[in-house]
Image (cartoon, rainbow, N blue to C red):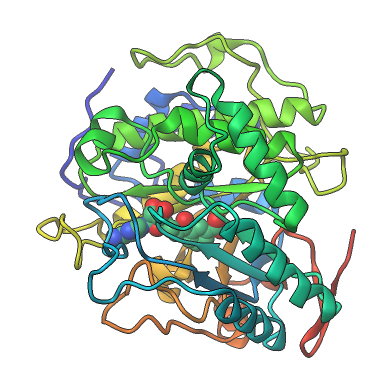
Length: 444
Ligand code: V47
């Protein structure tokens, strides 16, 4: 096993494929799963453009000719948080200046605005509020649902990271240490009944105990994060997942993170009837502590494989997309760090696309990557650049304002210029057909 360097690898273009990538290319073409050791090669080769090309080969096979965007709005119900994660500039303590908690009237008003703007999704997250009662959360979802139903809209309420869901199980007094999934199931079922439509991918950070203890101690670890998403999938809720990189983690830890996610997705896809490759010798992992023989590897990247889609199975829940998030040091306790470079962002997106062979989508979240970089990423594995967003409080790119709106036209233009047909999607990646602010989805 090689050791990954923390320092950037200088890139080189020789006009021919780095020989170290040849065997990897063969596997990618055949739609076979890459090992963690091969992931290291993707991270260390100076031939970064070939890594991007390989990732784009997969992306074009899965989504020929198109790239996705959506019309959405982000809303944070509170920035008050019991945790103090070192990478986070969003949280405030209860009486600190800038702390806010929204009431139901504010939330209803935001739902109105979202519908008026033609949004197909509200993305809602907040801190782990120490005092809000359990009822606040299903009441919030119900209040939005009422506004949405009254307007005859089909807007998806995508809300609460896995970290919040575990917190809610605790405040609802449903959390049982010896049966964590039971409390999670109770909370998710209540929220689903209230109108929750899907789960966002936040709060995953990097699935590594060392990084957890140094940078976000107190937050749930990877096992609880994965439990929430597994239960969500079992209840028929689709979810996304993120990876926050470029702070104190190593590239090797990112690869382990990706491996854990693809194993969880293997399980979700197996429940949907997909069958896999049980020949673990083909992609045996070299890392200590990684158990090799859990489930079959199911890949979606072979030519002609049908992608999972809503309604293919009753209670069909699965991970839709991986969203690598580059760390922004400004205003956080880790402000002394640089954050990842442009090339590291490009490479990480490409590596994620290649390693996560059972994920239908790879998203470049333009708010954190910038729209210019997201456009480049459409040629390095990304098929989705997210949405119109409007207000974004969690990171503030290049300044202080949280108003980070872009128009659907800007997103379409970026996509077209990259050579793809822009496709407006809803939260579940169904094609949106719209007339102004009124919209519907097609099932094909
Ligand atoms: O969980 C916090 C990250 C996440 C910083 O599911 C930071 O479709 C960079 O999860 N620098 C929230 N990142 C964002 C998120 C998300 C975004 C877009 C779409 C979806 C989706 C999910 O932002 C947090 C955390 O991992 N974050 N602080 C920071 N300083």
